[in-house]
View 1 (cartoon, rainbow, N blue to C red):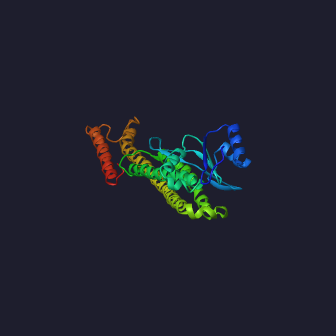
View 2 (cartoon, helix red, strand yellow):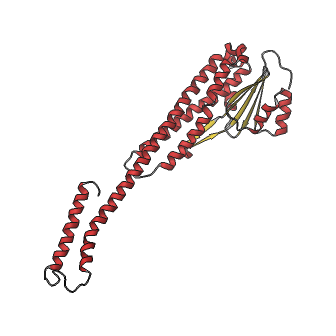
View 3 (cartoon, rainbow, N blue to C red):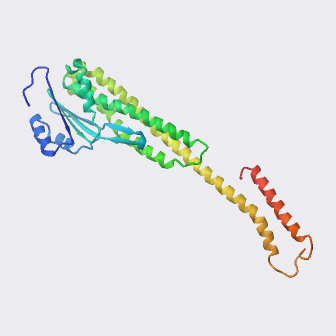
Length: 300
């Protein structure tokens, strides 16, 4: 890497790098071995660490795919030194390209230095969080409407699936709140905060709002899930009442027919001309009376 003049810095972007490639670059940038290990394997919880003059920030960019109701996450490590920035991305979701485009369109922000890169990457990732929260809310609203509709469709699997995705969303957003606060309050960043602090604070505000929205979504999903389970229980009770009602209705003719089907020689009304029509009429009237009673009580 060539020598940099005053006000210049280098930004190196890697995506799913090989180990030897990352180790070689890390040696040139004097990165700590532990930081290299984190960047190599990815799958880090959002965090902020300082290794000498280098600030390392891990975050999880994400994308919500409405068609699959799935939250897809990636991993990115940002190593910010006085005159260089290294970003290491894992997965298909990489905010660095959009961050570079925004910086190229804003020369004034570029003059801030390496902190401008950190802010741009964070800003793009947090904008994606806000968009994902809006899309998840729309999906939840549709699910809620379907749960309380007149159709008897059990949406429990869909609710559980969305709840799992919201939990993954929460795991990406919630740990980032103290990370951004640490960037604002950390003792090693005091010299540059006067230039970048308003921008970082703006990103932190967006993260706080998104974190609150994700918590609200999780709580709403619990409520919708409870409502769905209650409706399923109601449907099952209705089915049991209907089955019990029809069983009671059919029990009357079954009982009468069973009594007169015992084939005893001496039974009341066996020799009577109107015995058969009377028995049939009795069964029909009793069954109809029970039917009307169950309909009146809402069992049928």
